[in-house]
Each structure stands twice: as C-alpha cells, then as structure tokens.
Length: 158
Image: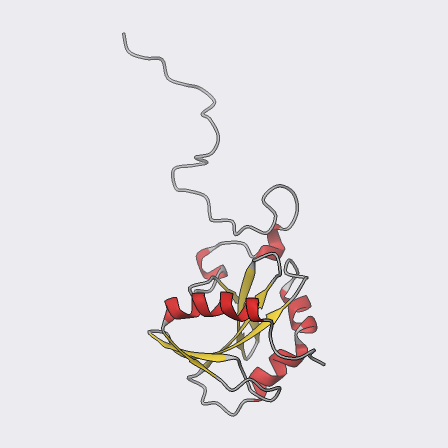
C-alpha cells in the first residue's frame, strides 16, 4: 500500500522535466487517481505517475515488483490506447528513471521520452557496477574510443 501522496520534491523535479515535453495538466491528488499529471505534447497525451524510491538501480522486473500498486493504477485507468502511461521514479539523491507502461511490460525511457534501448544505450541496471555506476552509457563512437590515447602517435613532419 502507498504511504500517501508523492513527496513534494519528487513532484517538483518531475514537473520541471514534464514542462519540457509539453503542456502539463495536474490531476486532483487522491489515492484513486491514475496519475499525478498529464502531458499534452508532440508525442501525444501521456499520463504520468511519480513515485519516490530508494532503490533506483534495479532491473525492470524489480521495478515492476516494487511499484505494483502504481502500475496497477496506471493500467486500470479506462483510457483509450492512444494515451500513453508512464511511471517516473525519483530518488532522494536527485536522480530519476522513466518508464512507459506497455502491453508487454515496462520500457525504460530517457528524460525526453525516447526508448533507451532503441538507440543502443544500456539501462541503469545494466551498468550498475564500478566507476560511473548509474550513468547512461552511449554506444561507441564510429571513430573508435575517443577517451583513450592512441597506442601510437604519428611522428611530426620534418
């Protein structure tokens, strides 16, 4: 069972990002509402539920298990198929993860609403060990690894 309304800081952080994606319409805050707000933008209409969590670096299956109640509310809303449903998780340390609820389960998104795996980037849970844990990893550059020095430096002319 949920412990109440979403924390004020989580909702404030979510609204900043939501306004970048389109017009935001707030829902009345009660336990039966399908989401916290709706975004109307170029992608269409999106109903968003914001939740606070201390466990942000977990697999999609773990998110589905931990957020069963929020996902059930999103799924149970009597919406037309064209209306998208998203779950946004906020960590007290200031990080967020974004998910779209689809028929086959959750799909992880970036903060602009784009599918992370579509562009070949790893999800947070696939990159949660070692230095840089939790950061989204971008695919290799077509020019090779630009972060390391070349093994051989060509001699200067002359």
